[in-house]
Length: 115
Image (cartoon, rainbow, N blue to C red; front, side):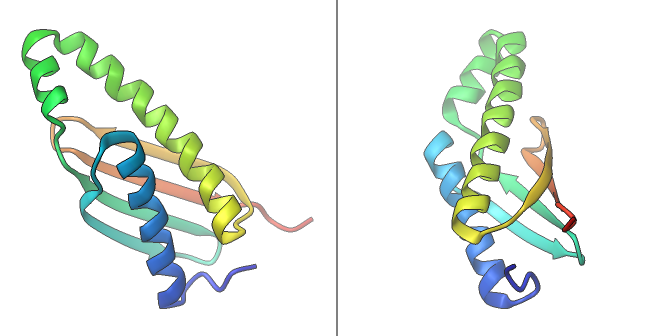
């Protein structure tokens, strides 16, 4: 298991988070903070507003919120997969809430307990 509270781990975690953001949205976060407990990680991220998102919000707000929802679901799936592959994490669940109005996202990662 990876030593979760090391600076090297936190940097790699942030790097993976931003890489997934760049893959899906074209750019990384404007602010990213991590909080690590014994078996849980919380990431606080401020995302940048996509020009497409701004246009959709003005023209078809319901579609914009639906796209935000599905993109968040895809983000969770990709992030979980990448963290397990690249950092060797054994993740039980990855929870993410995104607020489109402020572009803040909070991601909680709970590790699986050894059997």
